[in-house]
Picture 1 (cartoon, rainbow, N blue to C red):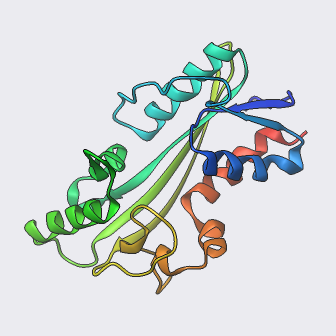
Picture 2 (picture 1 turned 90 degrees about the vertical axis):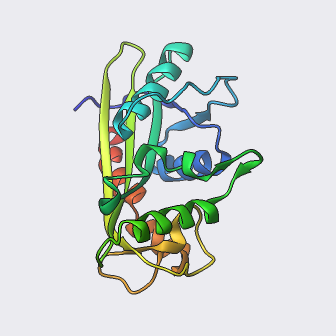
Length: 202
């Protein structure tokens, strides 16, 4: 595994919340973080069919454009009875002409399961993939996953996205019913980050 030896990292996201979360997690490693928006970087088209593929597109595009090491992530929910959908199209399922509607997306998932008469438990998993790319083309990949099941009706008002219909394995609460610190401790992103931070250990 290649170690990160610099002191400045580009995070290839235009999402301010995600940028702040990653910057906070990297504070102990004395790494300065800059976001894609600050560098005026466009958002590349995510044309791959896997989380790793799309994270690689974003990380390598940012590293090439800035000559800085760049970190990108791709994440989503995959439902077993729907052959892994929505998967890399997790956000797309929520798209409308006027922004994203995740309540609509959750209903779409449930309606698809009902149409297939999928048996219980309706298993699913959240996946987060980080790719850290260097300007010379090298990259390292770190994946985190948390299994669970789809529940209905929607429960809870914490979290975001598909959290109200996802109940992680071993818990009675959905992600949206959990305190956000508890969710962040066990989430797919936390599990991926535990692997990622190894490259920053000096």
